[in-house]
Length: 291
Image (cartoon, rainbow, N blue to C red; front, side, top):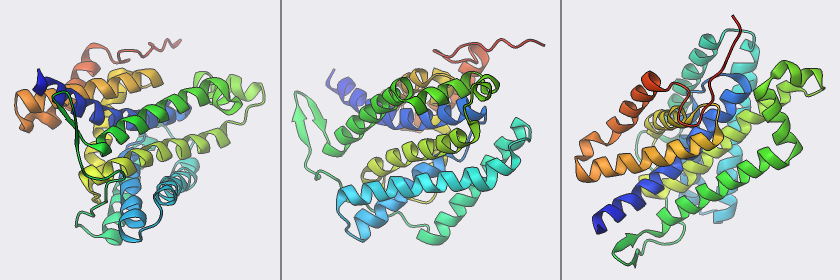
């Protein structure tokens, strides 16, 4: 039982990160119907900026954190303006290919700027673990989980209570109707890229002290975030969160009770099963279109 609880805590921590990345996928998909495969590179940029500002330059933690998230959000804006917006009238497959190209470009630029070596990031709250019953808890892991939960709550509040959040939901439901009632869709698409890249940077910044920061860390994290989004439902933000936690827990249990060699395989097995059995995801809605 103690081992199970330990694996469960580890799974919740990983699941919180996958949930944030999956939310980034759903935000852009609901606004543009594009799957942004550069999402994992925003996680990498958040970690790299955190390693630079907090690890190397010794900036105050709040300032380093805000700078890492803010700069990555600016990169997301540049990606939308320079890569997505000029091709906005292209078909969906073309836009997805563009995001793959952006992912390769960002990874190459990160390797050029920071090198191939892993960059250590000091823990935010110290390294001394503490014990709760039979579970060993690391302060940084608790911070990761708490930060993710607060971010999810804040995002849900934004979408349901703020005028801009409601406008984004309207655009995701019916862009033409949103335009007819006076909502400007293009600025909201730009904002969705900034918001999704900022969320991914948030994930990268808080996990950097645990995993270290490397130029290629975003690839596998982005794919797992996509698997979590598909598992929960690409058109459901709640589903993205649920999918992230389910994936994190199953991945941790598989690594603990079977073998760590199967850890990464869990995400892709779940992805394939969901695409075959329930393409809309656990909480996603089927789209009914008139042919």
